[in-house]
Image 1 (cartoon, helix red, strand yellow):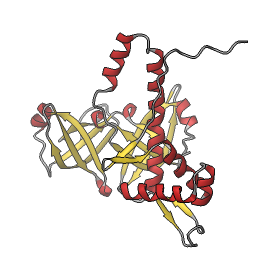
Image 2 (image 1 turned 90 degrees about the vertical axis):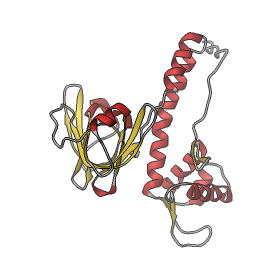
Image 3 (image 1 turned 30 degrees about the vertical axis):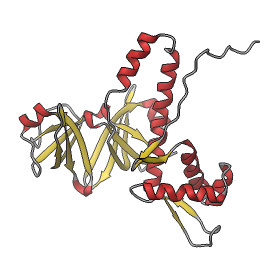
Length: 270
């Protein structure tokens, strides 16, 4: 049996997340963070990813300096002793990177399949370069999982009286091993969030989060509205400037965010 002929043109690429104009994490640094979480030691993690201890610690220091919050904490025990573990912010960053990487790899596969079809490839590139957002990330615990014939409703308890319902496939729920009490994260694109001043509007959207407008950033076509929720959380919505004027939203005004259950993604730590 002959090996398949490699494509004449191959689409390749890498994924990096930046902070303050510098690379925060890429594939290698994510592997290092995952190894630290697994082994509980920078020394053993460095060995696992084929780095020197100094290179590993330099990477950790750089990430801690660039990140909004520390990604790793160390316990006492000398320069090479003691234990190390990721902070909650560090785990969330790893999870976000892996989630983005999954979509990025699927994108590369799509581009590879169309690399010789210039019109279709051009159409794909135009679609993916549109401004999109997955700004809203909320950590919580799975409260209930209600399975149906094909899909299931997953209710995530965010604390402070806030719940978010996601409608996902039964297959996805099994793959994520969703069950009551499990830690999980709800991801919501800002463009999927609808806003209304009404406290109890008659609408089919399952998720209704009541808060207060904390900031409005107007744009040429769309505006960004930040909603302060209980527990110090912030929900971001992108709506048209026309809608912004019609709703008469102003900082300090009470507002309800409406999100369809099918627009909520659920992610978990492995």
